[in-house]
Image (tube, rainbow, N blue to C red; front, side):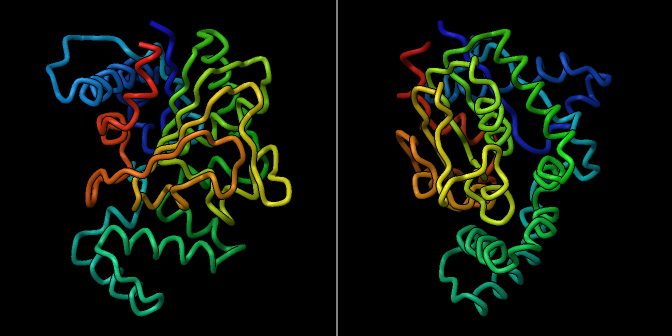
Length: 276
């Protein structure tokens, strides 16, 4: 089996804390979970008998600082009543006609588009770790990329699966380290195209409104839930060249961003099977 490295997303500091402030312990616990989630997707839900799929998780959450709430999205953390008020407000402002998750997705995109220079402040509400990673100064950003690069360089995987904020860290890491050759990059629930918060501030910066697949990555597959409020926009082909394939999925009416749902939904199967 070819090596697969995972790059985790937001809300994962507690693994470090629970492992006694051990990066290795946090990464091992997360790898075990990713194996179970992938097994469900690959087998349709057969019992997991300790099959190994992921070689290692590149762990960097400890570098971003502890998020006391550990909640990746303040909007999703609202109770149902508060969400309904939020959605009603959204419909008044933007004539949103979808259901709850569609309205949350549309409203978040609406705000990010209109807040522009203040969008980073809004990002702190639903994704404080994105704000921490993108903060001015860049020390946390550089150390996070170094941590991910070290794991990829040591394992030399054929496949990198990057979830959520991890897709941003992986993208910048691969651009910054041209010696890291990857056959397949899979991004899940990626905010890479998020205007005013991430896209314009990527390293390297987009040219004439376009980002580009890292040149030593042979294939790039992007998968996003249609209503994931972290993956705005869910499709990346409109702002990145070199995205070979995209898929929109419908994971769950509220649980629309977790790596468990993405890895277990079956959308990765055809892409991963040649490497298993």
